Each structure stands twice: as structure tokens, then as C-alpha cells.
Image (tube, rainbow, N blue to C red; front, side, top):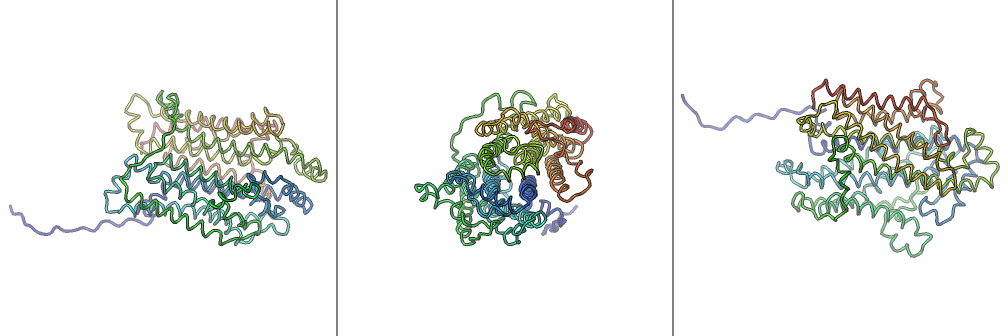
Length: 561
């Protein structure tokens, strides 16, 4: 027997297929982009859907020059002090100008909140739970880790805003009926670029603070900067004392950049980009120089013990989903409350314009737009259903994360069957949906009370959002149980986006009615004015319950990932 010393033979590592690299196994950048696919899908569906909805609804409601003139008069008659919140109306007699005034702030806020949530946790949360220790021990340097994760978020934001620009151009050219409605591609790109920069700038604050303060505190401060900057920038024109602080906010810097309304101020975007890059560099260097997981979080009140999820599988699922449900519910409450409250001024203006009143009654004969209930039915419930459905998809992703993150194996080591886990977790999701809609209903009630309308009818009508969200969750449960839990949330979001697009596009494109009937949202009636479609109610209950039972049965028959 003889042993020979020498240099061992080195074998080349097997090459990785291109699809595997794209899907997230080739680099930190690709994996981060893959992990954020749910957020990308929701952002694209929400922002793209609202763009389509706004263009189609405005073109249908105000299809004549006289109605557009009345709309412009209504907008310009709004008191100056109210413009600090709802924005300054510019060229609102066009689809682009109206959309920029009505939905522009919502777009910037949505992009900013997404960026804050993503960038406050992409390094801080992973460092705290130890998932970056193995990555940091590899040949990758810390700066490279941070840069690749940051680049993945910037890529996602760019992809979503590219879609927004394309949808804005296509929808205004497809639905625009009057001169000036069809937007040039440059205006759409300018709007998408502004939204992206506002979002990335807001997220850069959280990115720079997270290595020092942790995820929660960094997100809270960045959110305060976002909200404070929006309010200060909006009221600076009417409150002279706020002019000085307003110069520190990117909302004030870019106030003259309204490309959808035909106003351009490209240089104002430059300082926003500079601040964003500087804060990104600060965050990268802080991550590279500080110990992993080391932070000085600002103390916040602890969650009550009853909500910590320590009282059985249903309680655990509900407790883990509750913060997400509250966040979505507050967003719906703010938007719904503002829509209901604004119906008061809209009704006052209609009293002085009998021609506009007659025209609106002709277009919408089923309900009275001068009432808060009718106004909510037109301006809120369509978007409310879309948002509630997308919120349900995020809650389903949380339910599925037990399996995808490896916790399910430990849970099933206890005396708990697979079907019981699936059903208990699903019931917790349904409970979180109920809380989300209850919070939204409270905001609607406050807005209707301010407007002086019937509170009970729209509050009860808000239950349609719960039914629709539960049905979307049922789709996710069925897919996750029968096939793979990693795609449960995505499939729920796809179902919501698909049904919303069918509901929005089929009527104006005059496609066959049977196609429109495929959209579940078309069977929700007009609950804000008390008109219910009971077939749609039953369909939602069947899909929600049946989806959960199918998912539980599927969990019993397949292997756990």
C-alpha cells in the first residue's frame, strides 16, 4: 500500500443554469430580488390598477367639455387651506391633470412606504436574526452585500415605475376622449421618475438609520419625515411660518414638477437624487463598519400579552398577522375617510351647478353622488376592494412562511396534524382581515359623520371588502396547500389583479358580458348605498371556505418543502 503526496486535483465548480441565476441563486442581488417578488407584484398591481381605474372612471364620468369645465371650477374653488392635504389643482380638466391632483400624492406615499419598509429591514432585520452571519463569513465583503441588496430594491422600484409609465401612456391614449387627455410618453416617464425618487429618498432615510437604530425605529423616523415633509410642503404656500422648514423637504423642492398636468421642473429632481445617493452611502458604510446586529433601538410600548400569539395555533397566526392587518387597515381608513369627508364640499358645489347635477344623474342613475354614500360607491369602493385583496395576499404569505422558513417542521413535531395547522392558520388570517376592515370602517364612519350622511349603510357596506379579501385568501390557501406554499401569496395577488383588470377593462372595451362576469369584484353590488349582490356574497364565502378546506386537504397529501 503506497500513498503519494502531491497537489490535489481541483475540479471546476459546476456551472449554474441561466434561469437559476435569474431566479435568485446566482448572487445576493438576484436572491434579494427574488425574495421581494411579492412586494413587486403588489406594487405593480396596485399602482398600475389605480392608473387604469382613474383614467377609465374620469373619462366616463366627465366626457364633455362642459363637464370638464365644471370639474375645474369645483377644484379651483377648494379653500387654500385644504390644498395642503389634497394638493394644488393644475389643469384638472384633463385626464392627466386630474390624475396628478387626485392620485399623485397617493402614488408618492405608496412608493415611499414600500421603500421605507423594504430598506429599513433588508439589512437590519436579517442582521438581528442572524441570517447574515453565514453570508458575511463568505468571501463577499460587507459593502458588496449592502450594495447588492440595495441595488435589488432600486431595480424593483425601476421595474414598477416603468410599468406605471407604460400604463399611464396606454390608458390615457385608450380612454381619453377630449383634447389634451392623451399623454405623451415623456410626461408619463416624468411622473414615474418623480414617484420613484420620492420613494427612494424616503427609503434612504430608513436605510441610513437602520444600522444605528434598528428596523422599527428607523422605519418610524423615516415615516415621520415622510408625513411631516408632505404636510409642511403642502401648507407652506398658505402658512408663511412653514416656508423655512419646507425648504428641507423634497415635496417642496419638486412642487412645480407636475408632468401629467403639463408642468415640468426637471432640475428640481436633481437635489432629491443627490440626497438619496448620499444617504445610501451612509447606510452602506455604517453596515460595513458596525458589528452585525448591533443597534440602539428607540424603546416603544410592548404589544399586549393577549396579542402575542401564545394561546394556540389560531392565536399565534392572528397575533403574527395583526401588525400587517393594522397597517393596511389604517391606510384604507385614511383614504376612505378623506373620500367621505370630501363628499361634503362636492355636494355643496353641486347645489350651485344644476347642469352638472343633471349630467351626473344621467351617467350614474343608480345613486346620488351628492350623498357621502354615493360618492364612496363611485370614488372609494373600487380601489378599496383592490387594496383589501392585495392586503389579503400579504397575510397569506405570512401564513405560508411557516413552511417556507422552516418553522412548520418544528410545529408538526408537536401533537398537531397538518390539516389543523392549515385551518388554524387560515382562521387567524380571516381574523386579521376582520380587524383590517373594522379599522377601515371606523375611518369611513368618521368621514361620513363629518359630511353629515348616513353612517350605518357605508359602514356595513365595508363588509364587502372583508368578503372579497377572504375570497382572495381562499385562493392562496388552496394553491399553497395543494402545490407549494412559496407561491400562495403570489397566486392570491395574481387573482386579485386579474379580476380587477377584467372589471376595469371589459366595459370600456365593450367585450362580451360573460368575460365581465368572471371578475368577482363585478358581483359585489353597490353596498355603499345599501344594494347587495347576494350571489357575490355567497361566492366569496364559498371560495374562502372551500379554498381553506382544499388547502388543508392538500397539506395532508404532499411533502413539506
